[in-house]
Every structure is written in structure tokens, then in C-alpha cells.
Image (cartoon, rainbow, N blue to C red; front, top):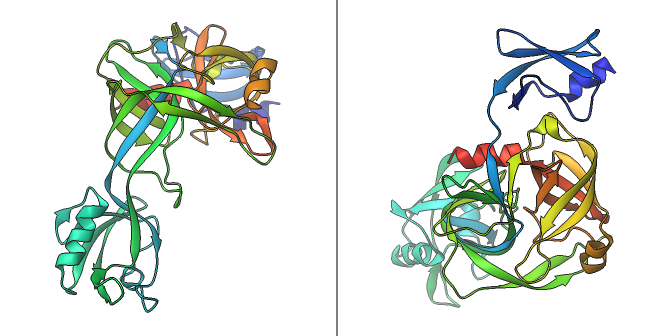
Length: 364
């Protein structure tokens, strides 16, 4: 048991208590040392692990559960596909461009749309075009030689690009002092490449859910909605592995206030989620937390939960696309957000620690 706990407990914890306690392991005892460390033992006798301790008062957060529309304009343009020009050759592939690359500049000119790129290609007259590319976080360059399409009578690069993205997610929580908010609990990725969408600017807009497509084994469901034709909630500032982040420009929607629950506060057992599967008003549904991965090795898959609320199951089949970001409440604290559904069983899915989302939100 001691060996298991040593492997599965985190190396560092943040707490607002004088001791370090893990809700899932009541037999664990901790003795704080002067070096801001806690020596964990079983019943005070069997050594388990030494962990670094950071003391911080748990913030009180405004909890969401409301759907919101996401409008993103990319930083650069993302290559989603490539093809031969007139069935002969693909200039982009010949230049070493790959699917998923983000092209930020062409001949020194910054790109913010597909139109920007096409203009540079068209004006090249077949001369080499120097591309600045971001690939997996690394900046590289490529030299593309456009090919003239006899069919279309225009210079072509042989690549398809995307410059924007839109979708629906769920607001998780807001910091009332700064107006900073977060949602989704996972990144927005391009549908064709699977790559994280680089954010230049964006808006969070009100959404009304009009339909819930029921999820079944092998076929995840989804929420359908329409963007409200009113002022945006605020701006989007970051698309990261832990979700989408922004700042409200007006009074933000609220479903009550809860203190942040740190990872060690989470235990297997009953909890609740706040989610909107019809209209704009969130409702509370029961879930069961089946597993907790305290080390946080996977940033968005820190716990496994199962929907137990019969009403939610009858309306959606369980977790569906669009519910990502739905806050998870346990013992009167916000402990996480729904992130993914299990394709084979839509009643089960993953959740992220609220602590991870909060730290990312406050770092912007």
C-alpha cells in the first residue's frame, strides 16, 4: 500500500489547511517540516512520501455551467490539406510544408487570413515565396515555388488552409476580482489536423441550446445551439491544453459561488455537475467519481466520472460534445470540469482538476 501511494500521490500540493490531507485516503497522516514539506505516513507509522507544500487560501469562484459560443481568429493560417496543382505536382509538399503547420508570414508579410496568403501567392508571378512556419512549437522556414494552374489561370500553392474556428462549450468559472474566466477544460483543436488552434483574437458570445443529440456507444452525441445576436460576453485571450480562457467585458453569468477544491480534496464517490442541455439555464445533475489521478500526469484527464442522473441520461445519453467545461462540485467545492466522453460508454468520461484550470487562468 505504501508503495502504491508513493507512486500515485503528487510530488507537490497546494493547501489552505494547516495539514495535508487526502480525502480519498483518510488513514494518511502528515507532519509539516520547516522546509515547507509534508512527510506522509499511514496512521503515523509507515512512511509513504515526502511532498512539497505550498500554502494558499482557496479562492472563491463564480461557477458557470452556461453554454457559450466560441469565435476564434487564428494567429497565422493552418495547413489542413495538400493536393497537386492540375494533377501534376504539389508546390507546398515539395517545399517541405506539412499538414498541421501554421504559416505565420509569407515573404515577410504577417498572415491573418486565407485571403492574405492567396494574395502573396498570386502576386509572386511564380517567383519563390519565403514562408515562416510554426510546427509543434518550433519556428522553421520554407521556400515555396508556386505553380501556374492552366485550368484556373492562377498561381497556386497546392495547400488548403484555415484561418478561423467556431464552436460551443461550457463556461466553468470566473474570478470575480479580475473578470477572468475559463471553459472547456481541454484545448480547441483543428478538426482536420488535430493540432491546437493558435489564437490571435476571439470572442465569447451567448448561446441558446436548441437540441441535444443523444449519445450512444460508438457514436458520441452533441449539443446543438445558436449564437445569440447580442453583445459578446467578452474576449478570448488563450487557447491552451487546459481549456479556453478570456476576460468578461460585462457582468458575467453566475450559478453561485464555491471555493476552489484542490486535488487532494477530491475523493471517489458522489458529486454533481452543472450543465445546460436546453436553453440557457444550467441544471445540477448527479455523477459518481470513479477514479482520481492525483499526479495529474495527463493535464485534462485527472479523474474518471460516471453520469448517474437518470434525467440527464434520458435527455442526452450521458456526456455529449458541448458539455465540456461543465463544473464538477463535491463537498461544496468546485473540484473540476468535464472534458471528454468515453466513446464506448457515453455515461462515462474524464474530468480535469479545477486547480489546473485556475492556475492557467491566473497566469494570463
